[in-house]
Image (cartoon, rainbow, N blue to C red; front, side, top):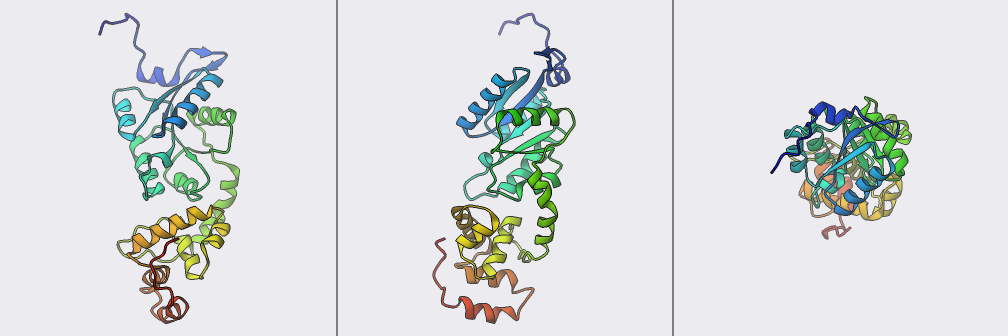
Amino acid sequence: MASSGKAVPSPRAAARGPEPMNGRRSIAALLLDETPLTRESLSAGLSLRDPSLQMRTAASLGEAKAMLAAGTQPAVVLCNVVSLTPPNGSVLATLRDVAGAFGGTPLVVLSDGEEADLPLEASRLGVRGCLPTSVGLAVAQEALRLVADGGTFFPSPFLHRVPERREATEDDPPAPSGAALTARQRGVLQRLREGKSNRVIAQELGISENTAKVHVRGILRALGASNRAEAVRKAWQPAEPAAQESFSRVWGRDRRPDRG
């Protein structure tokens, strides 16, 4: 390919963008999203609203890693973690992989509100921002700029819930050996222990009933259980052997596999 003869900016210059546009410093941003519609729409919307926000996109974590390895270091990365999570996979596990992949590059993750534990886990992993999908482009644009400039962005409702979530985890069931349960799944399992339906669980956790069903199925798979009663017994039996008999009385008639 013939050279254009133009000077190639350094990775730092490409990321920081010394040339102001419309009175604003140019910032290179990378959007990582496997879903074509949201990836293209969000990238185009942010670029149109703020031309000084130079958006690039990647459709997979591997593609994003290759771009970073090539020296095109962005000032901030915006990642749709849910889109990268395989069916029946753990969003929080995907978040950990993404956070580890970008190292010191400022990272902002999209949160659709279904995974209430995502902002808390993101803050623990050193992620610099959590952007709810309920906000508009104006907020998203300023959030990316804030993080690129060294700040952090987390929605205020999450900040108020942090102490509550920490207190709630104290009553979570022990994770059985070999079972990788997320904090949300442990919260659902706690409510299964109390005999609550999917509808009640959904109302208490602020999620949809369908999402509650998905969590229940994930718990059954993780624990190798065929129904809710067996899942509860397997989770608490090592810690509370005496509780097994009472659970058998409450749930003994439920011998069919859970269908949500």
